[in-house]
Image (tube, rainbow, N blue to C red; front, side, top):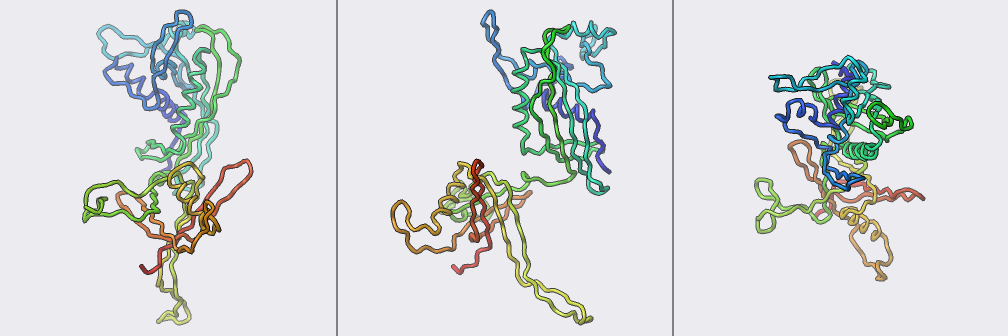
Length: 365
């Protein structure tokens, strides 16, 4: 079954990203502890008195997310003998605004949806817009908070539950804050209308870049005990020789060497028998200031160099061993390779892109 995704689902996702469980915590009168992974404490300074106060940014912004089918505002109240806060709508919208002088509002709308034309592949890219009406003195904090949430989501897969109870892997991209109207005076202070676009893409039961960990060692393999734990030469626990770095793309190929043979029962048909397997890996990365990148750069520039730091180079073995450890799920795999090709792409006014092609080690030790 394909995921059924509605504007209410998008509203709930964005409210959880911005507010965590703030609404549930308030509704329980503090019985449920407040938790918000994206929020942080900020320092507020009173312009007149100079008094300073630390507040949670999500609580300070106090954003109420809603969709068109909902009333813009509701007033929370505690009834006599009622432990849990109840939400009681007011007849007059203006009257309710008078009770909400410190509250901001966010309208969530779906603007587009692109789906894959397949009943087997549950995949879609959903575009949405969030329109905020917020007090002008909070706008700088909202801009910062949106940027913080955007950075926390970049390249980080999110797990959402669809209407059938299945866990769907998704990526959420939050755009920049756009000013739609000039500030104006309303019933609850000087406010401004701003908006940002959101794009959510998901693919059901799909693995992502984060599900496979790639580690590389140019200093040999680790030592392991009989249980697979990393140890030193004395058998004591130690740190690993493997390093990591941001890889923009890594491509793995398993190439089978095959021999064509006529089939015994039907000689006019050809069958194939595999006799060898070659593993070819290509890693692409930016020249970011990381220890592993520095080691690759040292290898790259020293290969073929006539002099290094003014000294003539000597004959060196072109077989350069590289160890790669792959962790996928509960299993770990180590490959011993040789460098088949190294490449750097320099483009004026752009970042340097490097790539390394590795093939299985075949030299007799």
